[in-house]
Amino acid sequence: MDPVYDHLVTILTDKFEVDAKEIRPDITLAALELDSLAVVELYVTLQEHWGVPLDEDDSAAELTLEQVAQAVTAQLSADGAPADRGGAPR
Image (cartoon, rainbow, N blue to C red; front, side, top):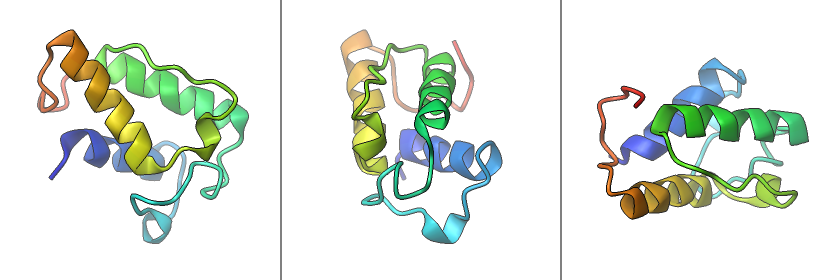
């Protein structure tokens, strides 16, 4: 299991009330009906949790959940931080 993807799913279901049945790696944030403000809030939440910078530009809503998780994982790798931090923020 990918801890970054799993945390992303948790945020989407708990904070943004996305139906868990709709969530899959290949669905975009826009397809989940997250508007631009929700996408920014999601990115801020991920940045705060993982302690990494993310680029939430205008095209972020067109990214799939897998691509968002990969972006976080890439930043964690670049930062030298392990992806599985037990859910504890830095």
